[in-house]
Length: 475
Image (cartoon, rainbow, N blue to C red):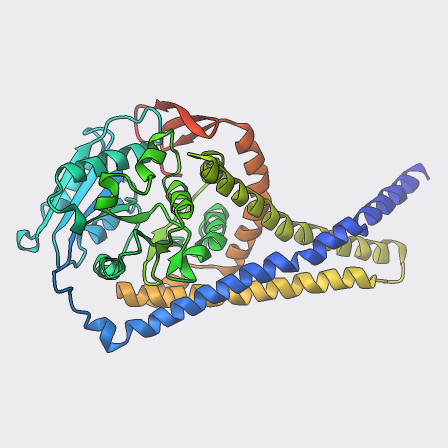
């Protein structure tokens, strides 16, 4: 019949496409990005394992302060609104164990921000004998940069004005949604102060869903970060920066010798990518110890709309830049993202389709099952890559959970019990599938909304900033 003939044509066309050399090459080549990311996860697990051993040594436990004493540190926290874990996160930051002068500067857009009253309540618990103090600075609304960069620059200028000895002072810029361990600051400043060639230090996050059965979009957010975090966790000297935690020497900010403030002020949107590009341009590395890991809690009920907006904001930064070097760096990241997504998604889609087509022919037409060697090879390589990645990821997560439990004095099982490896796998492939589509849409759309603030970019710079009446959810 005509219907049968059309079905046969459709099957033949599908077989010819799935058996083409282009598809076969994509399938076989997928082993390359899988082995690459799996190896990076293995190296990250090994780095965290070494840190766990170091944390148990007598030398690490009995670390003595420098002869000149610990330098003054000012912690800048750009703040907007108040979310579920805000109070808990701020308490962990305000309760740093630090043997030197410590100042907290919360930078808000408006003194009517909901966070102001909570900050005032928390800062009242300070013990004056520990040389701690906190203050709130109103930055006003951003006009030609992201609100976060505007707040950071305002806070840094405030620190410069109140500085007494810039050569022995540090600025720690932190997001208000991170939860560091109590000795993080002292450990980081101790190391940074003993390495004059290191001008910037950073940390890295570890996303944790609040429950094992959290939304698949929460897991997709977690999975999106998994390949990105390895650049910060393999070696203590890196080229990457995480915007959730950036430590600078105040003397470098006064005369802007690193060019960070001037790059931020030129319509900057991404604080961390700009810093990384500037440091790369100057040939300087960034310090990131394996112990500088921050648990970051994800929302349990993230919707696709929230995930899409979050992903767009992550990708929007790749088309913002301060100069040609920054532009080339960001576009290189675009190419890597597309390469990885195609490498992960193409075999995950075409191999099951081809297997299903073979199964249909066998059961519908009683055909003899015949699997070409080339297809068997590509399927075998894909399976090897998946297993290799899975084992490497499981090791990295296990070592990270152990490290966090030691640093925070928490139960390791309390972390691992919140993670579903099946949902992580689904979230990972979903993120790889959606990312190229979201990237194309984001590159073609010049505007984005971030916590109630709308940004329009033009030629790599923020050109228009529009503010809503009230802060919105981070995602």
